[in-house]
Length: 154
Image 1 (tube, one colour):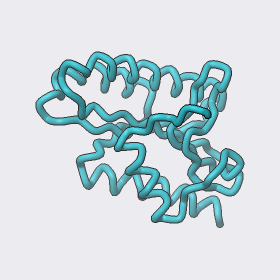
Image 2 (cartoon, rainbow, N blue to C red):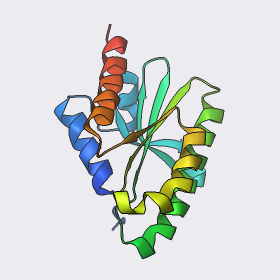
Image 3 (cartoon, rainbow, N blue to C red):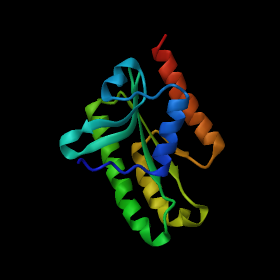
């Protein structure tokens, strides 16, 4: 039996939000219907998949990272942040600059000092970082994705 992919609480939350907004596609081909696709292939041979993708002429990619783990486990999240940065860099190369990369992250205030280098790295590859615990950030993120989806529908 194939092993089930691990999804963070944050990725599950965004998937639910996209589903409620009727923006969530169910297969990679739904990207052509201007729907948000979860685990969109960027470089399958290298096992690089964007957490979420939406295309409306421009490819909008979102990587998610949940830093809400025990402090001693944050080092594994730093590696994950680097992998997500590589995914965004590869996507930029693949889509030749017609890509709008975003990162949605969650972190506890007491670990911000430890994760700031990871956020800085991700910021080098993303147009914008969105704090999942900041309602204004998440409203702006969802509005951006909804506007992109609806502009594609004419």
